Amino acid sequence: MTEEMSLAVFDPFKALAAKAQEEDAALQIDHTTPDGETKLRSWVRTVRGYRSGLEKIRVAAKANALEYGRTVDKLAKELKTPFDTIITDRMKPLDDMESVKRQAAEAKVEAERVEAERIETARLADLKRREDEVARKEAEQKAAEDAANAEQRETERVEREKRIAEEAAAEARKEAEEKAERERIAAIAAAEAEKDRLAEIEANRVADVNHRATVKGSIYDTLFHITQDHAVAQSILDKLVLNKIPYVTINY
Image (tube, rainbow, N blue to C red; front, side, top):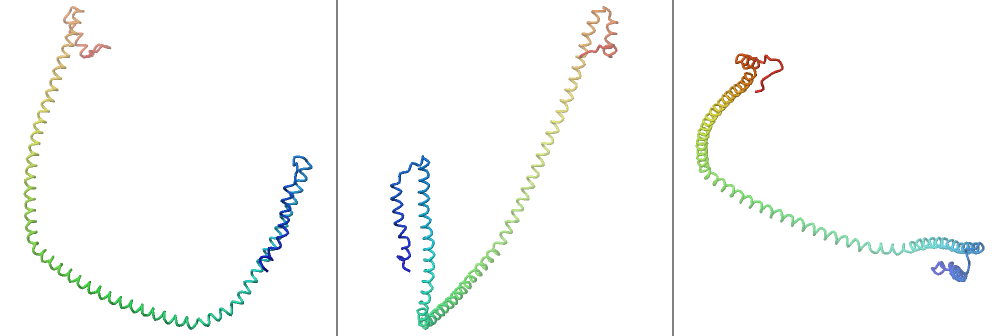
């Protein structure tokens, strides 16, 4: 089945499509009228029928094409078998020869790799030996320097600790002296403060006594002015001082 043969089934629909386009272009229908609406719906159903027929042909043609493709693949596979057999048989000696060459090349590469690895291992071992020798000499030199400097460092340490101890003792003495001086000054200040406190208390007491005497003198003068009798005025004042008169107190 050729492509032209398989597509020939669509030829009637080419003519039918052209005919439908021509008829549709010439069709004059007023779809706003009942008769026009009926004709328009009828025409659309007709065109849909054309399209449905085309779809059926398409499905059938595609199915035939798929079956034809499977037949072609099967036949081609059968025809290729002799060719594949000849190629396989004739290429086997060549493939075997290539395999031998490849194995020889791989063996050479492996031998070269092993030799290179041996050389590198020897180089690294020699490098490590020389590095170890350098490290040993450096360690010996450092040990000698450490031994030479040990006594000097010890002397410096002893002198430093002695100096620190002397400085600490001097600082302690200074702090003790300063503390004693601060305590002496604080004691003097405390004594002065206590003296001032007691003086303030005494001054307040004297002021209170004087104030009370002034208040009582003023009351006495007022009572004497009222009673014109010293004894009576003094008696009333004594009772006021002792809170012996109900509802009456002296507000100092």
